[in-house]
Image 1 (tube, rainbow over the protein chains, first blue to last red):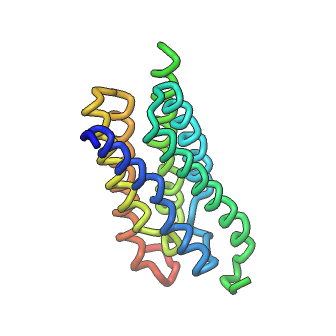
Image 2: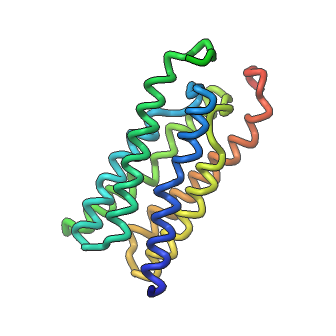
Image 3: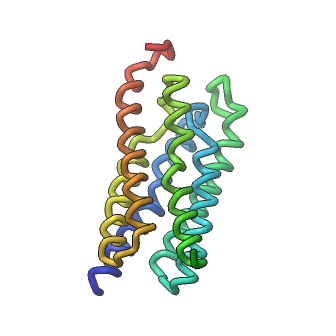
Length: 92
Length: 92
């Protein structure tokens, strides 16, 4: 595996899985009041465009990793919507 | 500006500024308990590697945007550290 591909795959994997701790924290605590939904909406738009960028470049590390990021953003937005009503802090 | 550059700059700008709403929310509310610090640590590592990827490719959209993301991640981690002690929810 050449250096460029190794860096791209590692960078993409890290940025793709970055939302995972936030997702697990939301599921565990069911508290998301302090998390900004706008951040994940903007991330979704950006990651969507990065997928397109990868397609134009035919660059697989960029395509695969940003598709995964997109899915993570969607999951986090779903959790934000679901647990936002949980203002009282009680488990649902 | 060709299509590839336009997509790259737009995608990079969106992912670079994505953390901004979370940063403003943290500064405004001084509440960060529900935000995962590990997410921003992993993002920092990923964005750092994307900078290196851009350097290897000599691809300016990737270098500039990911350096900006790196700075945003650092700011958010600083705020997480600073306001985490604010467990009582009172303004400091």
